[in-house]
Length: 606
Image (tube, rainbow, N blue to C red; front, side, top):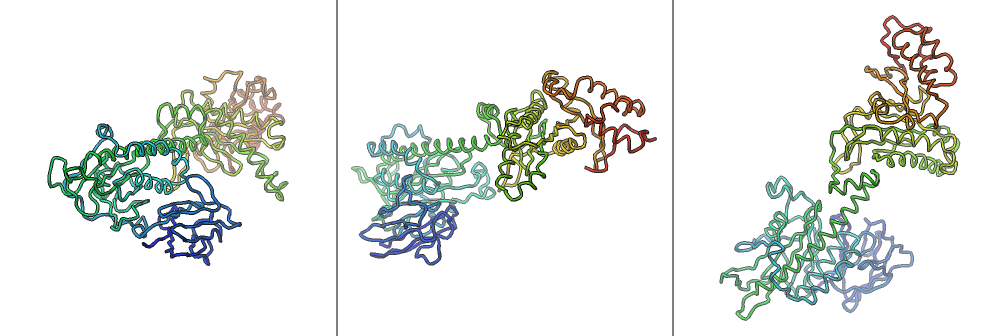
């Protein structure tokens, strides 16, 4: 029997095979001069291992310079021996020692063109409970060992390789086993198989094992695979139904087969396929009850695998979501069993936050980019903490800026109030000189907040997506952040946000003042710009009296009573950013309101 060592990468097209001869000595590695070249895996060294085929075993020894060991069932080895049918992992590549029956590349495994004669029998799990396991001691022992085996599987390919061996070992009458994965949307394939792209002859991953003495060619049935995956039921078939009443005569090299789906949400299609010969009962017929007992065991294995893969999927999804959402939002999502990232149109509050002083620091640290990176990381950390601690989501980091939003996936009961709390906490964190061991001394922030309709969720292409927010309110938030420079304040907010603050935030938490109506460069629609201020005790530089007098002054400006406005605002020009801005705009026309004055200052630059 011809023996081959097969190397398979994560991508089904990555495959390399070497036929082995008695006392064959060869070398494996990434470099082209090796006897078995695995050039797709950067985790494999250029010259990784020496191998020898001797006395029915493959001897493997890692070279001294090889970084990654050989992995079997989660354990690491530098030197070991592999039997035929054995599988091991180096880096992200799986290796399998196979016989002639498995010498073809798995992704091109031939499927049976001859469909089973007669009808397929389908079973739910509870329908098999009355049948006894064919080898209960061995099969129960294997179920007890299964969790450790699964935990040691680093990839789907390794897991599948373990499973085919498990099925062959624990079902005495089995001759050939296979584990297959299909990545198409099976929910659509039953109604319209062609449109869904489901083709049972083209699994995206397949692992096969056969008995050493099996001389035939194993061809899984397309019809059985399709039926099992599309109905989520196990199917069994015993060939040549000549006698009826459940008695089937033996025919051909393989007499029976069954296929069991592994059911797990959002996992595509997985199935376990087992085919074999006999056993026969006293009448010379295949014992159907025994085969159903085997099917019951495989059902338990499938349920085990499906449950564990589902838990893994939830853990991975939770890890992914925790990068964007606060623990409270995460708990709410999990409590409602809804972790969908589908985009939805909602009332959304957006917060843009940009670091001030970064350009100057870039010049100072131009020769120490790692120090500059650490500084930016600390600044972004303060921003992210402020957003997440106020139950917001992180949409993006852009250089030294961050974008957060509220209102998705959970609705906003109090509108943009959480965004305002986040903004105030971020400003306070930057003003606290003890934060980040003084690394952010000399830095400040500018924050813009806007509230309105937007689409939020997983936004992007089929191959690459991220949590994001889309709509005019995002551009408005960015505009308000840019206006913090012109008004000389840390936080600018829109009118809707200001209304929420005045209604739902007490004065000992936050204050607002209307600063001006402006028409930003490149825009036709005017904006009313407000400043968000902390409580007086936290910022006594802007007193309530200043805010009241400023409000009188800005009302006079809007009404075209500029001489009155000048009297009210002049005393604050040197100490207050918004006053300086308004006075500067009026000075452009010698403190005389234009004849066509509409209460809006038109800006000529951003």
